Image 1 (cartoon, rainbow, N blue to C red):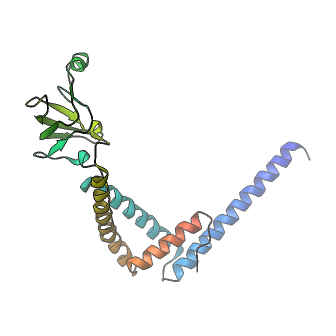
Image 2: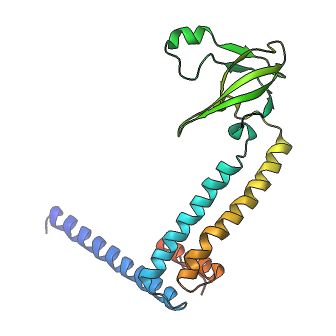
Image 3: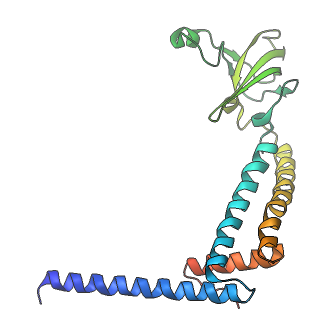
Length: 207
């Protein structure tokens, strides 16, 4: 037997083992689903939908209540700068090189009022008026990214707790109809999803 034949034989054995393992996982998922009256296919679909619901809740909670207040400012809000921050003439200048020369630096300790917001899928800009500091009265645009990290630790912790509460409420709201459709409570659906995910990862869930 030459080395190519040996390699092909080993590959066949590995593929066969993988298929056998896949079959074992499917059987185990079917068994887990059967305990709550679902087929293996239904259990897998339920788990996929639950995972999507959890992800959606995380994303929506962050949109509704960002961990950093600076990332969700609205018209009329004020914000105190903790670091030197660039004030740009425009969020989308026609002459980028000229715009670079017109950027002003706002000193830490200054504050601004938001007079408008321009938001896209990839960036967020604030039209602002400086209300305190050596550039008081000046207007321009500040990118939300430039404000990241400018927060008080205690404020961040408060916002984290608030966001966690929003996330939990949204998860409950998103998961309930999925579980109810299959005749389960949210807790039953959550337990089944955990078992399915563990089986998919090659782990053995508790009975």
